[in-house]
Image (cartoon, rainbow, N blue to C red):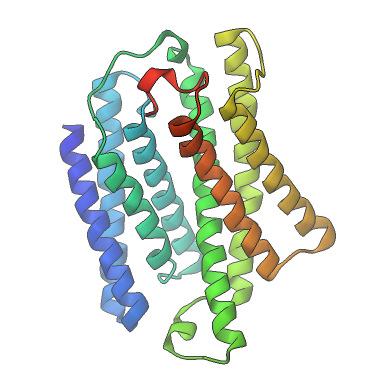
Length: 275
C-alpha cells in the first residue's frame, strides 16, 4: 500500500513542480494556485506513504536509500509549505519543488522491499537521531534555494534588468532573512542530530566518536554552518557572501548524506542498507 501512495506522491509533486515553473516563467496566478494545491496534496499523500510504510515495516522508514531520499523530500516539502504560509511567496516553489521531485524520482528507481533491521539499528535512538538530522538538512535545503534565488536576483538588479522575472522574485532583503532564519533553525537541529548520533554510537559500538567517514563529514558540515552563523552574528555577514556559504554548506550536506554512503566504507554503510 505504501508504494501506491508513493506513486501518487510522485505524480502530484511532478504536477506541482510543472505548475510552479510555469508560474515562474509566466506569472500566471492560476499556475501558482495549481502548484500550491498539487504540492499540498502531494505532501498529504507523502505523509500517508510514510505512515503506511511505518506500519508495514514496524520501524521508522529511514533505514535504506529509498526510504531516506523519500523522508528527506518529505521534510523539504513540509518546511516549504510552512515557509510559504509565513512569507506568502509562491515563486520559491519553482526552486524548492524540483529539488524534492528529483529526490523522489531517485527514490523511485531504488529497491523498495522492506528488510529486517540490522541489530545496530534496533534502537529507540533511530527515529530520534535520524529525524533531527533530516529536519536540519531540510531546513538547509531551503537556505540553499534561497541562496540560489538571491544570486539570481542580485545579478538581475546589478545588471538593471528589472523585468517580470525580477519582479516575481522576492527582494534581496527577504531572501537574506529566509537564509538567516533557516540557519538559526537548521543549525540547532543539526547539532541535536549529531549529539544524539554520538549517544547512539556509544550504545551500539561502545564509543561516542570513532571518526567514521559519516561522523567526520557531519562534523565538517557542522563547522561550515557554525562558521557561517558566527560570521553573521559577529561580523555581520549578509547578502551574497551568506548566500554563497549557504550553497556551499548544502553541498557538504549532500555529500555527508549521499556521497559518504555511496563512495566511502564505514560503520554507516551497513553492507547495502544505504546504497
